[in-house]
Length: 382
Image (cartoon, rainbow, N blue to C red; front, side, top):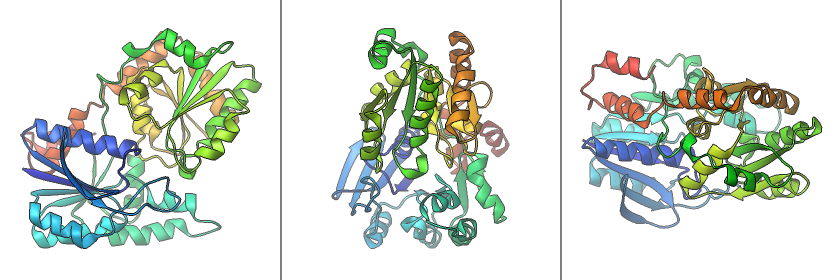
């Protein structure tokens, strides 16, 4: 079976989406299927990668989006799809690529759309003033779901805006984590001491895109609150984005290390394993892959209670909190009050429930390419 994924907002510095597309492509190939990924980029390209064929369509940067691009040359995209003739289509975008649902229906290709974000949440984060974000999202979502047979959501939180409009074509498929790459065994006390610096003993990590909807400023405010309470903490930030320059100025007044974009996954894994707590303050996260990678590294997570991260860390992987620096600090201290061995073991146990193989198997079942029964697969994806 030839499975084609088409994704916007995929690039050298994108995080969870890039990881997801690549892990799925790798998993599909390991099970004997052909995988192709079509993405926007600086120039046209066609190459073979470890996760399958990757076709890049030249696309312009989105102003103010930190380097992200979206495919606007839809004629070229459709011509490519007509040429490579996929058996199944996965669309990871809710903007310019919605039209692919119609192309798939006309071409007799079963297709689904990934809901990697909440439209109502994105609108609320970026629209100034009292815009009716929920109503606008409902109108947009009703228009979108008419184009696809199915929508795939990673969490109940992600699915809520489709439940609200009465759409019943949602399938829940959690994402996964590389349990070998992200491991408690990577914890290196000497490396941790180097990150902390002299006189500090608590390492807090933020691994996030530095953009408004992710609320990275809350991690800085939480650090300030912890230090006000006498906690000798340092914040290490991995990631970049539109707020990078602003946060670097703020970091000069606090014990903050800005690592920028970490292109090497091994480096990310090493930092996550060194941390005492990972913060996930984004209020509209629909899964939180970085949080799951932290759990796999044996590091508990403190997350915003309004996001889906609470579903991911449930069962001992950390705590959720209202979005205030005082309450985030309370949650961090509550997590740290447990013994290190206890909290790290609980985090790892939770992560082991999310291998990528589980995600790949569930999606192949959805594509009709699994040997498992539909009932078995539904049980496996929760």
